[in-house]
Length: 333
Image (cartoon, rainbow, N blue to C red; front, side, top):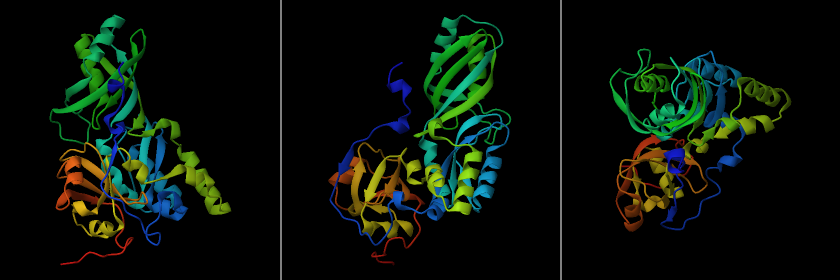
C-alpha cells in the first residue's frame, strides 16, 4: 500500500513560511512545558484508553470525579462496546476539541461475514471502499438520518480466518464503521456485520500513549497525598498537542489580546504561517512561546499572508486563551 493511502491527511508535514522576526516578552504567558499541574488540570487533556462497557459520557464523568474538576469533554464519541483512544479535554481545553473534526481517525475492526468468501474477492471489494463513500447513519445514532459522504483514506485487510476479517481503516471523522461493514457485506453478496472495534488513533494521538482510568486515579492520588507530580505530568498533556493536527499560524505578542477579545486576525500580527493553507480551512493560532491562542478560518491562502502587509487574513472561530494573559495594546472602539 502506498504511503499516500496509509497516512491520515491531518499528519501531513507542512513547511513553515517566515513573514517577520519577532521576540516574546518573558513576563507574559508561559510555554506549555512550564505549566503547573493545577494549570494542566484546567488547560490540558488525557489520551484515555476507553474500556468496553460504559458510554463516552460516563467515562468523562468518571475522569471529572477522579480529578475533582467541574468541566471536561471528549473528542469523538465511541459506542459503549468500542474501546481505544478517547481524548478527554479538561477544563478550558474543551474549547479546542472542535479541531479534532479535521483530524482523521484510525480503527482496527473485526468483521464477520455471513458465509465464507474467496480471500482475493474480499481484498478487492475492501479496496473499492477507499476514497469518498456514501453512508446512511445507523438507526441508533446521534445525527439526523440523511445520506452523507465521508472519506476513507486507507483500508488494509490484516487477516482473514474463515468468515472473520480483521482490517485497519483510516477515515474522516463521522464515518460509521458498523455501517461500512454492512455495506461491504452487501457488495460481497454474503452479508456482514461488525463484531469488534477499537480506535487506535485520532490525528497524532495514538493508542501507544493511551492510559487507563486506574492510571489516572493512581497518578492523582500520588499527587494529592504525596505531592508526587511525575505521573500526572506524564498523563495530562497540554492543549497544544491537540492543535498539532491543524495547520499553524504564529503571531506576535501584541496581536494576542485582540484575538482573545473576539477580533479577527490581521496580517500585521502574523510572524510565521504554514504553507498551503487554503481559504476556508481551519488553522490553529499560537504564540511565540507555543501557547494555543485561537482557532481561525482562513480568508486568504498562506502565500497571500506572506505577500501582503495589510488586511485581515483569518476570521475568528474559537478563543482558546484567557483574556488578559497578554497585555492589551490595541484600541477598543
